Amino acid sequence: GDSVTQMEGPVTLSEEAFLTINCTYTATGYPSLFWYVQYPGEGLQLLLKATKADDKGSNKGFEATYRKETTSFHLEKGSVQVSDSAVYFCALSETSYDKVIFGPGTSLSVIP
Amino acid sequence: ETGVTQTPRHLVMGMTNKKSLKCEQHLGHNAMYWYKQSAKKPLELMFVYSLEERVENNSVPSRFSPECPNSSHLFLHLHTLQPEDSALYLCASSFQSGDEKLFFGSGTQLSVL
Image (tube, rainbow over all chains, first blue to last red; front, side, top):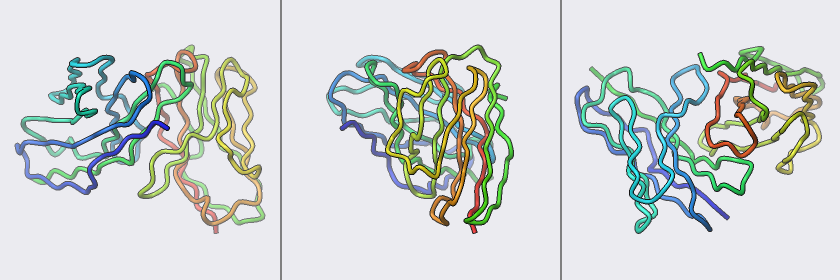
């Protein structure tokens, strides 16, 4: 079945550091790919998405490119802030499914 | 604020108790979901409702009983739970079932003693 794998956390970075959170997926078809973010004490929010190969999703300084050849959708940000501290979830959805499949999440802590 | 409201935020219950979790959305969405979030495990989809009909049930134990009286409200009735059921229960909604963009509530943190 379809699945999503993420790098294990927690990830701790200093403010203004470069961030990469790796995500790879397994799917039978051509899924849409997402990053969701969960801030402390809150539910998940959609951060960005890409619906086909080579698409780049971007939002709030975060970017991720849909790489079909490597089945990856790594999340990057050039300069993280303390307010970016959260848990980040990579996810996929195939159009025939009634559900979004989530990875286990990667916790990010940004220290001043 | 995502437009999806869950109550209560925290719940502590004994194994013999009966309680209910409530979820409400006024986004005009037609699909609602229950997810379970446990420590160090992926989000687990429990139930999916589309236009008030259950369209998916991922082999969830019968001690969890969902109810969707209308497209704006979703309940999760709990009875005779086990300590391993302690988790964050998240409600989500989307415009339609299978829609990629989910709107999540803040969750109910459940502790079963």
